[in-house]
Amino acid sequence: MTRIITGLFFIICFQSIGYCDTITNWQVYHNNRLLAKFNIMNVKNEIVFKKQNLKKGDSVTVNYFRDTPCFDCLSFLSVEDGKHHVVTYWKGNGTFTPKTFSLDKLMESGKGYFEIYYHDGEIKSRTQRQLLFRIKIEY
Image (cartoon, rainbow, N blue to C red; front, side, top):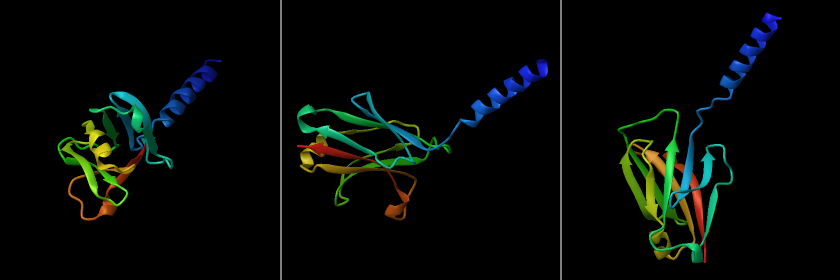
């Protein structure tokens, strides 16, 4: 009987370890309120804002995590319109540093569709960036 209980104990312990995952993921906050959680497996990664619900000074913060962290490397978050013109960007050190940008610049641009990209270190081409999510502002 003790063998069965011991066996069940080890099965349960090792099974819970198997669920641990280190997949790249990020959380998106609007004014410190969690909006969405994404990872590299997400297909639909769009956040929709209604312009009438946005106020001057509203911000979006992205907490980015990957399984190979970098604490002192340069990291970048760029917000681009549909034609890949940079509307605003964030530059700082480390992958774990929260990345915040203002929604004011997006609304001032008059455009309604934006893509948010992340990369760290120096990049040689646009394909080295990672598309995190899209923002759509409904006017």
